[in-house]
Amino acid sequence: MVEPSDAVQIWLWIGTIGMALGALAFLFMAAREKPGNRWFHTITFFVAGIAAVAYLAMALKQGWFPILREGQDMAEPFYWARYVDWFFTTPLLLLDLALLAGATKEAIVWLLGLDVMMIATGFFAGVTASDIRWVWFIVSSVIFIWLLWVLLAEILGAARQRPPEVRAKFNQLAVLLAVLWTVYPILWLLGTEGFNVIGITGEVATFAIIDLIAKVGFGFLLLSNRKVLEAARPGAV
Image (cartoon, rainbow, N blue to C red; front, top):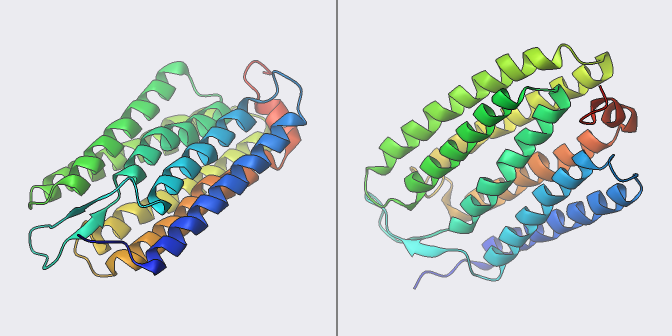
């Protein structure tokens, strides 16, 4: 039976603690706001909170099973809890951006629908031991490119109609998310689900760091300017 190493466990606990602290900070920030002004705080809290639960499951040596992939010599842990995390948290991150931009309901449905498809096909790529996983990876990557087009074209177009400070914050967060999310498929290729170049410890460590930036770091950048949040609050304009 394959067991995660101590180094892997340390990184999973770092992810757990970091996400939990972020969730508590966002909850505290939400408590300082009046009811009706907590849209972004609430969404961002659940992003970090759900991720904390997923990381806790992995840190407790749950949320994974060993898998021996075609072309590899030994089985490696497959952390399916990571995909459960992404299935719920990535649409919430995109919802934050869409609300900030003042996007239409139709654009929001497209954005979130494509994201769910991307994560679902990514999961099938990760859980497949045979070389069929490359088909799923390509499908997921194509959907990711489509999602980026919707985000940086249609959603960005809506953001241009917002007040300057809101537009600037959207641009900052959209670029951050686009850059970080582009790292994920590259890391997938280099990790145990792809060519196994960096190994499970490097994979888990890098995923934990990127996840913390993309969720907790993103949350603090979003919630740091109350003027922007007030101007972007649904129903405010």
